[in-house]
Amino acid sequence: MNAPRLALRPLPGVPFVSVLLAVRNEERHICGALDAVRAQDWPRDRMEILVADGRSTDATRALVERVAARDPRVRLVDNPERFVAQGLNRALAASRGDVIVRVDGHCRIPAGYVRAGVQALRAQALACAGGPVRALGETPIARAIALAMSTPFGVGGATFRFSREECDVDHLPFGVWPREVFERLGGFDEALVRNQDAEFSDRLRRAGGRIRLLPEQVSDYWSRASLGGLWRQYHGYGFWKVRVIRKRGGWPSSPRHLVPAAFVLGVSGGVLAAAVTQAWALAFAVPALYAAFLALATVATWVTRGDGAAALLPLTLPVLHTAYGAGFLRALVIAQPLVSAAPAIAPRELESGRVAA
Image 1 (cartoon, helix red, strand yellow):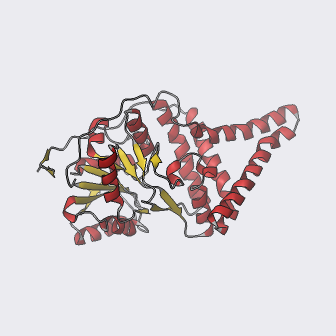
Image 2: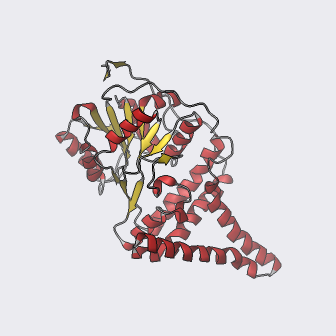
Image 3: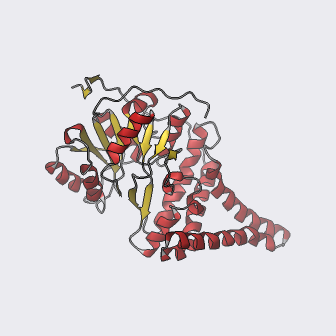
């Protein structure tokens, strides 16, 4: 990273914190997510919770309104566009905080998450701080999906998914940021259906900001419950990653983003070469190597995690890798307009450490 260090204003003594959730159809988990945020060991009069609902068709909206009736810190924000980036930006525009925290509707943050994040921002001059994610599943296949998303065998160098050491990282999903970074860099890119948070992290790091992983602040995240859901999720990640790469000049922030596409090309290229040459061994070369990889990943994960659901990794890992690779390759052949859609975020004036009316 050659960019100069991003210099930010000092935070007020007890900064006002805005916690943002962009949700849609989260009736199963939204109450637990809100309860975890409401239980933060942060002064009640110095925190607000904004839930941007994307026109949910289930009971999500009613549940949020019920919580808001009991807790004035909770506010419902309408998100008619329904997508995450638009929801986060609408919540940002409505927020008053000196510090911005992003939380998902299907995760639970620990009680000290806000305090630890603010302390890290202040002590280490960071642009973002936050904890790792512990993926969970409620059924054997969901646990196997969670394991696939929590190991380097599945997600490569996505450190926040498995590291338990404090370090600088390239991205955190549930960030704690000084509001100033949004005032300077704009909000989340509304042209992205997925990867809008990773794109913002990349924009932040390229501007010279540091992102710090706080290993003791582990958040629980409920993974997809089916292989079809996993396919759709990672196909979307791969597809929208191409736009992020194009936006940053045509080169990925990490080589790991290219590996799934290379795998899909290797398998399909081997089949094509075998069909042309009649040398059918070519069709099995890459799959044979991948089968050995799956065996290693299954045994290593079973031993280190002690979860019998690892036996299903030969199902979940190929879905994860193939979906991401297929989405990535599909995006390469579909023309996408390269237009920045990250709206400016208006600054908030501060007076004596309090948000001005």
